[in-house]
Image 1: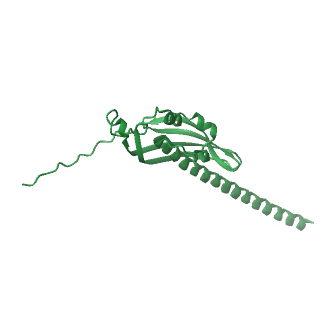
Image 2: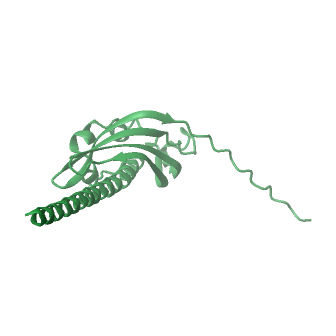
Image 3: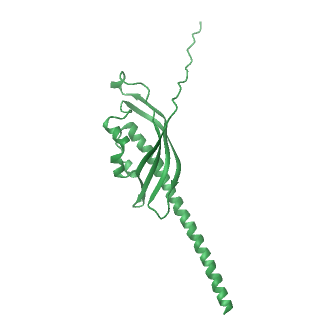
Amino acid sequence: MKYIRRLVWFIASRLLIFTICVSVLLCAFYMCMNTANVYIVLSDGLEKRVDVILTREDAPELNNYFHGDFLSADPALTAAFDGSSPYVNYNITGFEHELTIESLWAWPWDSYATCTVVERVPSITGTVISSMRNEVSSTVPTWQGRRYDITLMKSDGKWKIVGMQEVAVIIEATPTPTPEPTPTVSA
């Protein structure tokens, strides 16, 4: 009887250890999977949002990254389409988008994720539209970088941004113009 009890205890303890290890591995796998999906939604979604704000092109792809309630209440998107954006007088041809994710947490059993990001657009290329050449500067206004607390929600297997709370404004350094060499005339 003593040997049977030892054998049962040995098997049960090894089964318990195995179950705990598998549980930890599954939890880590789903946490990594959620984190990767949230990272992609953040990077692609915020870049597309900046693109829409700068170019004022209607982008139905924003619905893939943002919840509809957020899109209708976003002040930056509203400003882009009602004409109060500083970029309304420019034809934007390109920009550089930088997103730094400072913290990101998505529990495997939860349908919400929270993160803190810093969004910057260090360079914007474009020209003044022809009708406004004499009224606005030929230099495209700089983008104001910001730090956001972002909340994402998972519904139907897809992560979407449902809230962006501005935490801080990032003060960008004013770029100093590079001197251009003066042409020399050979005699």
